[in-house]
Each structure stands twice: as C-alpha cells, then as structure tokens.
Length: 362
Image (cartoon, rainbow, N blue to C red; front, side):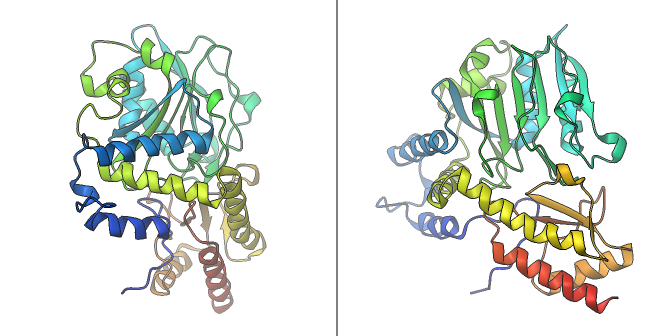
C-alpha cells in the first residue's frame, strides 16, 4: 500500500485517517446492510439515520440550539455567495461586507447582483495582510445582513474573534477554511456557512447553519433549489442530497468529538501553528506574510528571499514527501495548510526540512 504523505493542500484537503478507514469499509457494505454507503437511497432508513446523527452531532459539537436549521447544500460556499443575497437582498436593501481577500471579493461581487453593497472595512490597502480591527469596521446600521470571511486561505489571515455588529443586524460568516477548528459563538450569527473540502469532508457541498426566523423571512418567488425554506422543510432532502459527503461530514464530527471537542481541537491547532510560526520568526531565509495579530492557524503563508529559492524549495519539498506547499497563483510564495486533521508531526517535518534547506542554501 502506498504510504500517505503530509498533504499541505489548501483544499480538497487532508481528512482524519479514522474517517478514511471507516469510509473504506462503508463503501463496500455500510453497517449490516450489505449495501455500500454510496448506493443507499437518501429516503431509506440507513441514510435517514446517518443524516439525523450528523445533525445531532453538529449541534452537540458547536452548541447549536433548536432555533437554527442545519442544512447540507450542494455547490460549496460559492453557491452561498449568491444564494444568501438572493434570499435576503432586493431593491433598496443593503448588505455590509468586510473585504479581507479573494473570497470576500467574490461574495461581494455576487451580492451586487441582487442589492446594494456597503464595504464596512477592507485590508486591500496592504494586500490583505491583516484583519481590520473591530472598531475600524463601519457597518451600515440598517443592513439586511453583515458578512465576513473568518479565515482567508490565500492571504493567510484569520479573525481572532467574532466582529460586533449593530443591534438587529444578522451576522453572516463564511467559515469555509476554519469551521470547527476552534469554539464558535453560533448565537452571535444569523448564518454560518462553510464549503466542506477543508475541515469537513469532500468537495462539492456546504454546511449551512442558519437561524430559523431568517429562513422564514427570506424572499419568496425564487427557484425551489435556491430557497433555504425549501431545504429546511425537507430536511436537506428536497432533491437527492450529496449522501456520501454528508456521511463523511458525520464521521468528521464524531472524530472531533472524540478529540475532546472544539476546545481541545483549538489547542492542538494553536500548538501546531506555533511550531511553524516560531521558526519563521527566527529564520533568515523565510518570512511570514500575514501581520502578527492576524495570522491564520489554518493557512500559513510565507516567502523566501528570492523567487528562485521559492521554486527550488517547492520542488525539493515535494520530492521529499511534503506536497501542496505552492502558494496561490494570485500571490505566489508558499502556503502550508494545516487544517484540523493535519498531524503535528507533519508540521515538525516541514520545519526540519526548511531548516535543512536554509542551511544548504546560505
């Protein structure tokens, strides 16, 4: 069997090995059914139990009350970029956004198709290398909703807490790249959504946690597949849902709970990130690109002293069994994505390789 590598890819990304082992068995025959999980009907009793358990464990993991719907929708976070404004914007309505990078810009672009957009703050002035301070964010007080991206995979920045919004304004969060990597105050949000392919499961779907009163107040007259109320009423089974993705997400929830929950996983993530950041702060060759107070625990972005060294580093690291370190094409450099399932020993292996590379290329 081929040895598994330390996969630094930003997404689709590494999954917990116990989840992969469970899935390997379930693909052939799920529990005692004699039928693989990919082959089970979404209306049958086996999958009904899967989706019920997945919802239950999601609530347990993040302390999500019955006043929120938990939905599993297709199209990843990119569909949420236009589905949210479709449901809550319209003529004369405005959504406020904090612009902290590529994914914020994409959400802003889609929202402009359905209503007005107010940019409450932006870090574009410094190439998205920082998160605006809470008191520098100027939300519009009568916004239909306020939106932020909690972690920025390309820029390597992350909100350290939940931004404050004007009373009565629902706060929406694109948490695609740091969902359930630390405790989250669900009650402070009207909606939290996340593409699955970084911390939750395979690509192609999104987890959506949305307040029930917002679902009921959303625009009507939209295509059925683009109404949250339709999916909520049908328990995410209005059409055939991404059954395998939901199964994997459920197994990931079980795995996080087995680690000790969100507090425990946050400590692991903080300790992992510190290993690499501590080295970057002392290195003469490599430097982190995000401002110290805005550094991501999920995506650590860094540069070398020349592009030639960066190209050599990426090539040699890949050959050494450390793939996925090339930075996003829009910014260059390097990026180590170390999501929940990424092992601490993999981060240490990277730092050991970086020290060797730096010594060799003095």
